[in-house]
Length: 456
Image 1: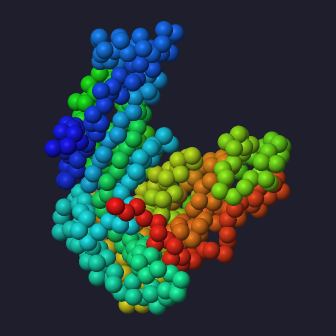
Image 2: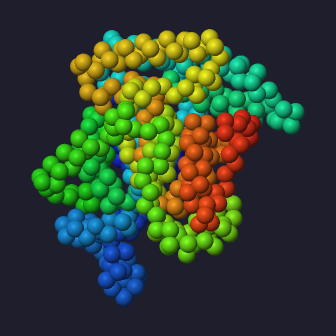
Image 3: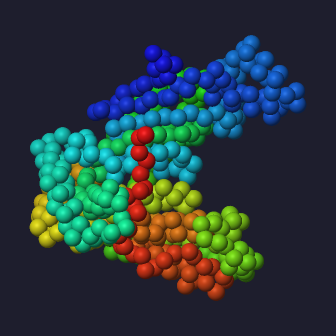
């Protein structure tokens, strides 16, 4: 048996198939030990060797319990990092955990998940809800080969393209189309690499999330963390704080504007200090491609873009945590994004349109007895959601350049190019030049077949 196989990870289960695993690395010096060492180092010039001697004699438990938890010196918790693996959770839960500007981690690459077998969460569990999930899976499986054949006629292999790379690119494009019919309750896995403080801060809000699934996950994570690091996760709860967080998380967290009041696409806020922006003209004009703008440029303005985007592509734009984003409520009211249907062969499109109509009727029936946050689990991810992004010039420059390439899903690429055009039209006079190619919208590129992480 290898040393890795002997490690004792802390595991906690929750509803359905879910599991939380706190990774045990086998290190002698634990995250709590590291936090204690750094805290002592900040208060003494004796050097780390003397602190290691103290650690060896008394350990870090009492120190963390007293100074980090008891006295509220939160910065100590920044100094110890942990990795949490959370599995078999819905796309909705994954986005909720990741909806944090300080989130670090990875999510399973959905393009390479076999959704013919992947569990779909069914929190309602009646005949109608079960039927929705069954029909969506059957459509996804039954349409796959027909969409692949259709794409090969649209984008035939070029002589200089390797067959295996071309096939991967075609399969990825097929998934890009059919993923629109997967429910938001389809499951995925995430890894969350965080520190002791950020874990506690994020869980303090998520335990008031409107979704029961997410509250169950939080309970399991908190229990596992208290078992593994009992001296760092014993914070006192204050009723006034808990009530405050419960109220705003319940009433305001999920973004659900009125349909008539929300734009298809617009820059809805412009807070710009043009005189200050002029100070950075040389940085704007001379910036090379694949180079980020210095963060200091961000002090010259903040803007907000709001637009409709399918929930699946929202999952990608949400990864840009340098901008402030609202977490949208997934509903059917903004309609199904047309690109997906237009990309299907005619017979598949007809089937999809009939299924979408039936699902909307079924969701309306379920809405009589169940809240909107529960109905999300049954809504295909091709439905549009309201997206609100607020940030500075540096953050948006990185976002639009990265998400405007032909390797990005076309529905998100379109929005990135639209944002780029507005930014250049608005700030071009101040020297802003974005490195984007407006002619690549929707282009198929077989090189995408190389974008994979393979087992050796």
